[in-house]
Length: 108
Image 1: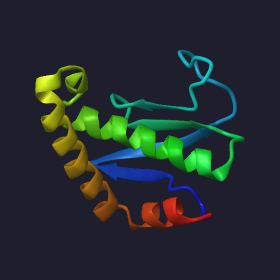
Image 2 (image 1 turned 135 degrees about the vertical axis):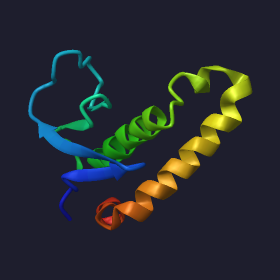
Image 3 (image 1 turned 180 degrees about the vertical axis):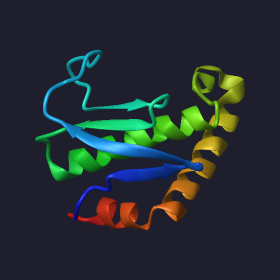
Image 4 (image 1 turned 120 degrees about the vertical axis):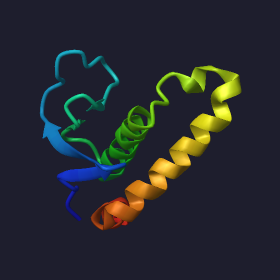
């Protein structure tokens, strides 16, 4: 199954690109990046399918947090419930708006 090239996140379309070398700002151990200002998710090429799926999901969560203005809320215990509720709402919206994403994430 092919990775989606675009993911709709709470009304915003993020382009998904694969890169062969770590972009500026990538550190050792980074496998992806979400640039919310550019609506761009970058994934490092050459990893296993399962790792690719995990990285894409991780970066989508960053996009959800940005779009719902939840960045940093997880660091505040009082805001933990708000963060989790926002993540659940955002993830459900992403799944509903991106039928191909579900197929990609379920593929082996």
